Image (cartoon, rainbow, N blue to C red; front, side):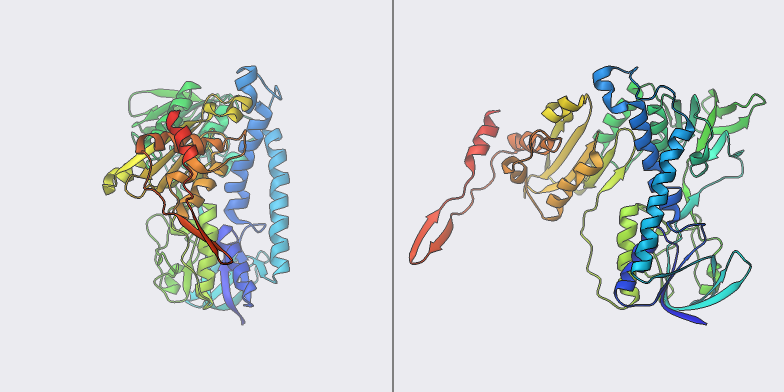
Length: 495
């Protein structure tokens, strides 16, 4: 029987990062992937495809230039599903090629097949040719990801009623679409198709959406969606969906509304892809959504030496956090030291417009009883925003009144998922409002919004405590200098 230091089931963000980390520690590693190519859900049906689709839609539709040239502006007048698919295939091929090269360079063994537990340390791998091989691992990491939740009452047909995986294979762009589910995946696809001028209706039984995002950001985001005529039926449930003889789909809503549409996307949640692993043989049990419970610091399951990381362990279900979870789990699994990760990580929603957030929301500040002040900047206040033709975009900073530290950064608008990292760095380094007031940002940039927001908060917070003089010594001559950068503050206060 083949024996390994670490067996990794799944080659998505968590699996590949874990495998490479263990290999760099000179461990013998095997990756088992049941898909046709390595990469997992992230590369083939999730993160990379949806973001590629978004970028292609924005480029071909001329979305970013409509602030200057009007809503009728198009880069390509007739956009087809094939236009979207062409760029997607090129991107996926490149991602797979890079990953295969990383495995080869780090001497990570990989095999295509379906893995199931035989004992807690042994797995059977069923290959495509019918052969079954058994492997033993000192440690096993489950990084199998998730799959779309597909309730039996939904008449999925792969053409007019689809899940989020099937959406990538459509042959024709719909003129109208109903999206059931106002979670991250549903909202991302809804706004992407809206940018392609598809008439989109979103239905969700909850009266609110994206509740983990700062409320003011969600309100601004919602206003932008309604302003471009997207229909948001929140607090309403799709009771029944039926396919009509003419190829249309009829959606019955519990409020009494009936909607006829070209296509229905069901995006109301995902399930952990654990149903084929024979978890019982390992002494494991998944929850009702197929997810596994782990120690949040080590990612070890209830069974010693079996670990799980990535979307299969639940929130936040981000490719970025999954990579870090996989790396930490691998280090723990092979007996290496794993440092505690940074407290604050960014959350990105690749909708149109983007949303990104890091740290505490205003609602969380209130719940914790932390006295605070907010600073707001709108992208149209920056020169770069004018150059780009931006009418929308909002950056919000939240500071503690007691310590003056930044505790939350929240952005909606163009480039939000890139801009958030400035705030993330300041958060983790325990920076204060003075950083934004006294720092110099490239001009013109959208990053200038940080300075505008910092000044907005500082003008209400007032000047902080005076800094102590700093003594500098040169040879035998000692001079005391005061490094109080007051000039910028005086200029700020006069604005």
